[in-house]
Amino acid sequence: MSRQVFLYDPPERFVAGTVGLPGRRTFFLQAMAGARVTSVALEKNQVAALAERMDELLDEVVRRSGGNAPVPAVAPSEVSDMAPLEAPVEEEFRVGTMALAWDGDEQRMIVEAQALVELDAESEEDMAEAEEKLLQDEENGPPMLRVRLTGNQARAFAKRALDVVNAGRPPCPLCSLPLDPEGHVCPRQNGYRRDA
Image (cartoon, rainbow, N blue to C red):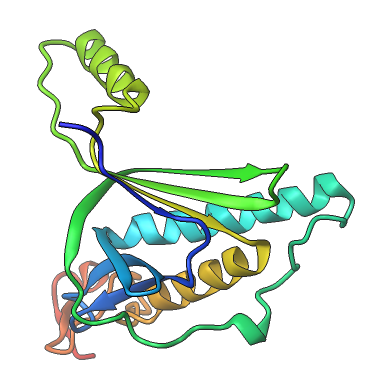
C-alpha cells in the first residue's frame, strides 16, 4: 500500500488544539485548506516540543539572515487564531515522529508529522535498521501530514501551541505536579491530600 501524505502548501489554517477537559485532554494538530481538514492526535509534550523547536528554528533563521528573512520576531497579532478546532475532529492517525525544516529558497517552514508505527526487531541493531529503512521509504511508509508555513504562520502556530499546552491544570506549588479538581496527593507532603 502506498504512503498517504496529507499535504498543505500553504494551509489556510494550521493549529494545535485540544478536545476534552483539563487532565483528560487529547491534543491535535489540525490543518485546513478549503473544505479539506486533517486532524492528527499527539501527546502534550510533543506539542510543546514542536512549538519550542519551531520558535528556536525561526530565531536561528532570523539570526543567520541578518534580520532579512520574512520572519517576525514575535507572533503578529493580525494572524492570531484562538478559535476552537474545526468540528468534527476526526483523527487520521496518532503521531509518532515529527520533523521541522526551513526551506530557504521558498522561505517556508516545513512541518512533518508521521504516524506512529510499531516495529518488531530482535536486537537494537535490527531495530535501528528497521527505523532507518522506514524513514527512507518515501513510497510505502506510514501516513504523514506535511505542512508548509510562512514565517508569520509559523510564529502564530508556535504561540498558540504553547498557550494551549499551558492552559491545562495548574501546577502544585510544592511539587509542580498538576492539581486535579478533586484534590492532589502531594509527594512533598508525604501523601497528604492537598485541595485544589
